[in-house]
Image (cartoon, rainbow, N blue to C red; front, top):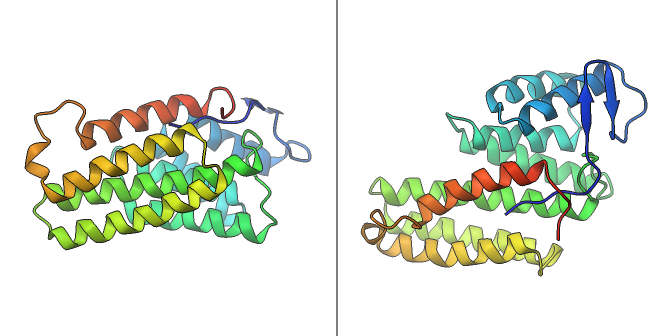
Length: 211
C-alpha cells in the first residue's frame, strides 16, 4: 500500500504551494492542475492534462508517472500505455540523477513507487489472462516478470510495508495462475485484493510520508 512524503502540495487557482519549482507560471499551473485531478480521483481528466503538459515538457518524469498511474486507475484502463509511461518515468528519473520531480515524493520513494506501479500493472494483466482462459504459460511468464520488478523494489527499500504486502499478493497470484477456479467465491481473492489495494493507494497518495 502506498504512502507519500510529508511535503504536501496545495494547489489553488493561480497559486502553487509546496512545489519545488521556480515560480508559478503556466507550466507549474498545468502540472499542479493535473496533480490535483489525480489526487481527487479524476483520472480521465488527469490524463488529458498531463498529456497536454508533456507536449511542452516531455522530459518531466513526474508527469509521466502520473499519466501512467492515471491510465491504470481510469475506468477504462490502458495497461500497455500505463506500463510505457511508468517505464519512461523511471528511465528519466535515473537519467536525471535519481532526483524526484514530484515534490511530495522523496527521491527514494519516487523510485519505489515506480516499481510498485509496474507490479500492479502486471498483476492486473495476470488476472485478465487467467480469468479469460489464457494459457497458463502466459500467466506464469507475467508472474516471473513481476518477481523481477519486486526484486528491484526490495533493492530500493526491502522493509517498506508496500513491498511486504506486494510479496504476499504475489504468492497469492502464483496460486491464482495455477488454479483460478478456486478464487471467485472468496472475498479476499487476488481480484478483490487488487481493487482494495488500488483504493487504499489512491487515498494514501494524498496522506503522510512513507513509514
